[in-house]
Length: 326
Image 1 (cartoon, rainbow, N blue to C red):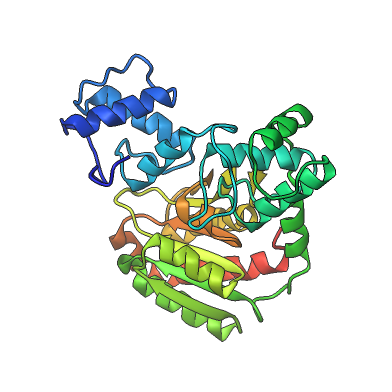
Image 2: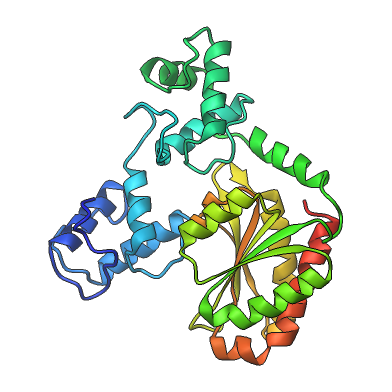
């Protein structure tokens, strides 16, 4: 996609950029009867929403930066290009399939996140070495062909998930010595501040990131090597959603466990009936390398009115998670 394309396209827009979006949706297999007429109508919004749901993104029928990126990545299938360690790291569906196939053979390529990082490069080298190929860490035609002949596409549990679970089980069983990063929108600053105070009182190390871009949140969390990444956002609706990283072939065990605990405790703190727990591929969950959840807590007014019980609920959820993190 050209840099000249806008970051957001929505219902009612009518231009050649919408036509390009419609072409991309058709290529990705969504709304195959959709014509590239350049009008962002109800059918286009529905196709965007279907695509977002299939990719584990927030579903709003609006094509923003995350949806554009996912559409670009959907264009890549394994074997279309050489895959290797690069900066910026290569991303795409071809990388995710490579990680799945390596995992099905027992090679730990890291999380199935579609990002060709050091773990994936090392797994490629190990596979090449075991297959009698040149061990250069580059997945080209020969490596791809050998891998496809030897591997199943999907495995019930990749080596990365097993390793992550084992690592969590070896960590301290209390908040003391835990490092937690709280990334909040401005509307959630009061909740984040009170939560951070309570966590520090419990002995945890806390890093706060208020109103940072998502890419910077993930980069800083990875650089610091925090134990938990917690995103706090408000929303216009009354619904509460707790998301953790999950995709085909991989579910974050720590994220799923923490999301389950928060999903059980947040409704009472907010005075609502229930919370929705979802395994998703939101960019900040995909790019962080630790237990990570993103909480969409509801309207700002509701959150402010329930500030104290909400902060206490999240703090107690983290403390309980620490006793059994996976």
